[in-house]
Length: 214
Image 1 (tube, rainbow, N blue to C red):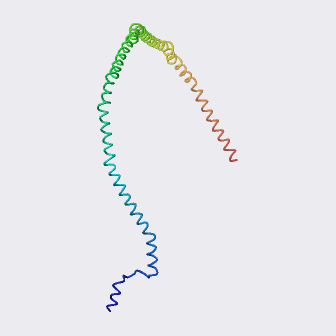
Image 2 (cartoon, rainbow, N blue to C red; image 1 turned 180 degrees about the horizontal axis):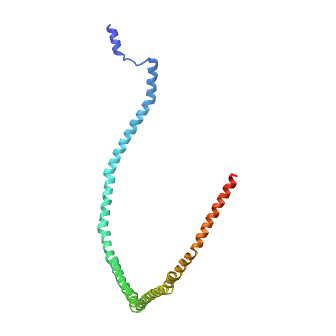
Image 3 (tube, rainbow, N blue to C red; image 1 turned 90 degrees about the vertical axis):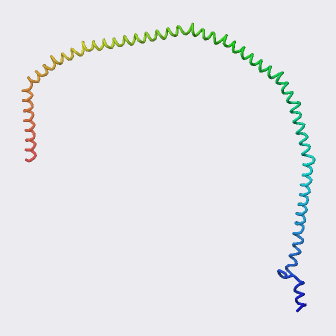
C-alpha cells in the first residue's frame, strides 16, 4: 500500500491520454513559446526606448527648448521691441501725421471748391427761380381750380335754367295735361275697343269649343 501511495504522489494526474497530451505540449512549445519570447523582447525594447526617450527629453530636448525660448524672449525684448519703437517713432507716426494733414487739406479744399460753391449756387441762383416756379404753379393751379369751379357752377345754372326748368314746365303745363286730355277723350273709344276685343275673344273660344265637341 505504501508503494502504491508513493507512486500516486510522484506522478501528476493527466488531463487526457498520453498519446494526445504529449503532441499538444510539443506543439505548444514550438508555436506559443517563440511568440511569448518575441512579446517579452518587444516589451523590453519598448521600456528601453521609453527610458532613453525620457532621458533624451529631460537632459537634451527640454534644455535646448528652454535655451531657445530664453533666446527668443531676449531677442523680442531687447532687439525687436526697440526696433519696433524706433520704426513707430521714425516712420509710422510721421506717416499718420502726414495722412491727417493731407485729410485736413483735402477736406478744406473740398469744402472750399465744391461745398461752398454748390451751397451758394443753390441758395442764390437755383432756389429763387425754383421757389418762383413753385409759387407760380400753385397760383395757376388755384386759378384753374377757381375757374373750373365757377365754370361748373355756370354750366349747372345754365343747364338748370335753359333745360331743366323749361323741360319741367313743358311736362307739367303742356305734355301732362295734353296726355290726360287725350286719355280722357280716348277713354270711351278704349272702353269700346276693350269690350269688342273681349267679345271677339269669347266668340273665338266658343267656336273652338263647338268644333272640338262636334
